[in-house]
Image 1: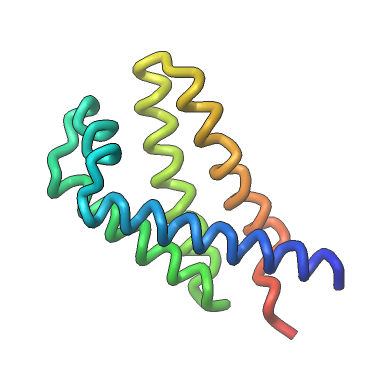
Image 2: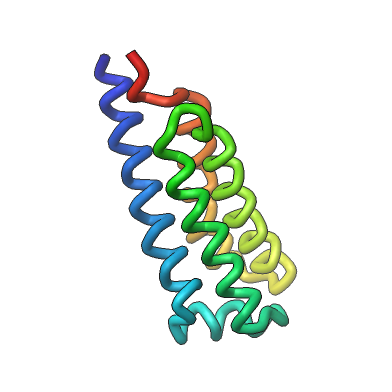
Length: 115
């Protein structure tokens, strides 16, 4: 029971972070555009990635799409980690890695709100 509560808190935390970051990308926040533009992303590309992140966040909330949402979110984070690795930016990788691991832990413990 305690594990389900912890996983539910982790899940909602991941959803909130995904919504926040997805909205920042979708709306074209300056810091997002600066980070992605150094990797050759246009404003439209960043907006599309933000839209995928927003959709992934919502998918996590439903049992039938829980795994797909987490995989989409993890794929977006892994994309960012790969670009940081190309830049040899260990600090950027270190910042993103816990978020990737969070999605993997949430998948491992499965959807917490089922009976």
